[in-house]
Image (cartoon, rainbow, N blue to C red; front, side):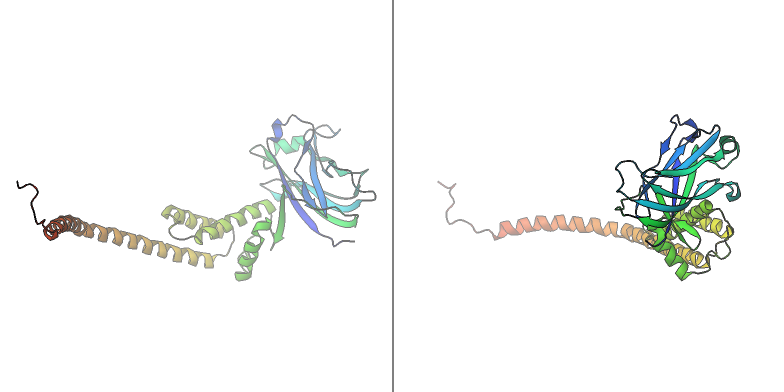
Length: 298
């Protein structure tokens, strides 16, 4: 038996209301040593006025004889404005060749989905699966996962590529989110992405940062602090970057002044260089030996 792991996967269904197909599949994602995918019925799977959602095994290749996965999983339809309005259901299932999909035919009523704000945002519907493999029989090789898989770090769901940065942030500043009270995981992810973007901006060279960038950084810092982040250390960093930017601008201004002061000398040098080249030609003529006989004399 393999070690139990829980994987969180987010799938955004674009143009949900205008979908004409009865079924929609996500790209594959990896959990528990094999590929999975979402299977959605935008108009319901034999359930009128409902959104049906399942996780399923891809049907590209037959599974080895005896291959099975005992999986505990939850499926959610996300309300981006209010976590309490999000819909979530949980179940367990043995996935195998004869039972390749499982889920909820009545996950949410379409009337509720369409009428309440926060489910459909800009025509997009966001669904989430949390998959924990309880028991494994047989093995398959894992492959890449185009669907978004996130990892939890200090209560924030982040991309695998962000784990190192977020861990480092909390290791150095443990109380950064001590007063952050938002519970909606998707809003928390958005705020964390905003914070990471700000830190990345302040780590760039002053040559790459404009005054507008610093102005936006200041506004972003205020926004994050109002949300409950404790960012005194980042505010200090912003002040240091602003001072470096001022010093850079002062140096550039002085260099421009010095260049203007040098212009007359540069012109004089060019004139002297031209005169010197002319004198060199005259010197070359003066040094040239004269012939013994003048061929032009009869």
